[in-house]
Amino acid sequence: MNHTTTSEVFAMSSTVTTTRQTDRPETRAHFYDPENFFDFQLPAVPRRQFLAERDQAFATDTATSEILLDISETLGTTYPVTTPLLLARYLRIRSGENMALTRRASAEVLYVLRGHGLSEGFGEAISWVAGDALCFPGGDEIIHSATDDAVLFGVCNEPLLAFEDLEPPRGGHVQVLPTHWRKSEMDVRFEKIFKRPDSEQASGRALQLATESMAPTRQPIPSMNVAINTLEPGKDQRSHRHNGAAITLAIEGAGTHSMIENERIDWVTGAAQITPATELHSHHNRGDRRMESLVVQDEGLHFYTRTTGFSWD
Image 1 (cartoon, rainbow, N blue to C red):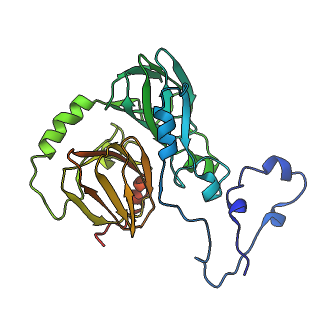
Image 2: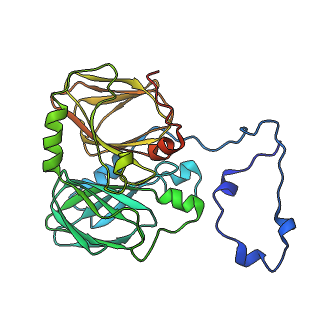
């Protein structure tokens, strides 16, 4: 039985201009007759913690730069990926410097880990501090400036657009407008969340971040689900699974660990880790501080297709 290779799957850039003059439509047709349509192998998404990238982002001598959490070599893609549909990165911006970036993505969500600064794009400016979260559409230039040394963590759906060989909307025709979730407002809302009684059916004490246009879905952009999750000292978040792959950034991770299937991963504050789709996982806080994390999933697509696959076992 013939198997499609990874390189064949992800080398799908347009070939119209190179083939139109040399063949005909019927010569481009391919047929397959496998006994099992699901007998299709791609490299598995690994459990991984990005410690070296975290250390580089926070090192005192790191220049203004992007630090990608890229496992394209593992997944066999020709473009950077953290999970098949998401790409995460740190932005390290030195005091008084800036970065001008254009994303080939629907939008990017950023969390400010350290510093103060200003982000400008699409005719708007957002002044940010540590603990704030931002969202800017893709397809046009965004300028991030730091008033003191800053570290931001960003996640976008560049791999999804690269996989489909698509470009983001241009000329202001965007679905999501620049958005600012202030830490001060999140703190007020968490005060109410922390007063809720414990429940076996609760998936966590978390705050979902949504944009105005996506508010009915509780998401920032159609393909992504983003939340700030918490866990009190001595508490456990019970085992669960879902069909969305997750990128979890430890905002405060001292004394916290995850169990992903049978593997223990000890958290490091400021570091991110991958929880592969469908794998059973739980979180455990044995420290003396409240755990806090930024969780970004491609679950938005699964909500839309009614395939979240959430369960407690």
